Image (cartoon, rainbow, N blue to C red; front, side, top):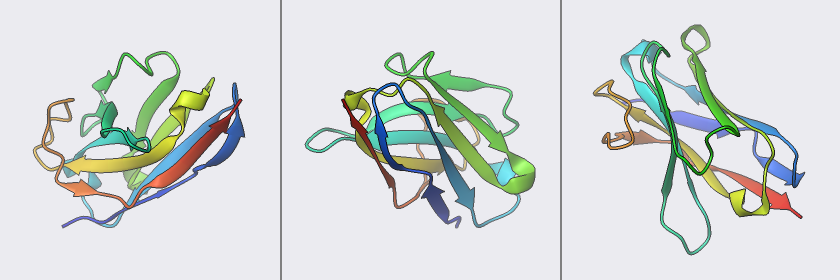
Length: 123
């Protein structure tokens, strides 16, 4: 089992940027594809981005394409979500997740989840 801890959330004005980090407790981290999701109050959880084990393949949701970028550093057992040009509708709790199958697609079954970090974007 792998434990995931997100950090980097906070409050920012529209147009600003944040970088979320997700540190894993288990090595080899490269066994897992990783993903980022979010859940706004009263809404379903939404897939944002996923990255393969090596980082060579990424998927991004249309809603964030061009603004959010997923990356990983296997040596630091960490996955990142760089978020630029934030909008009030990006306000949500953001979660990282690990996919033990290693596929890292939007339809993957992500087995392990972090506790989430709050992102609030004001207009």
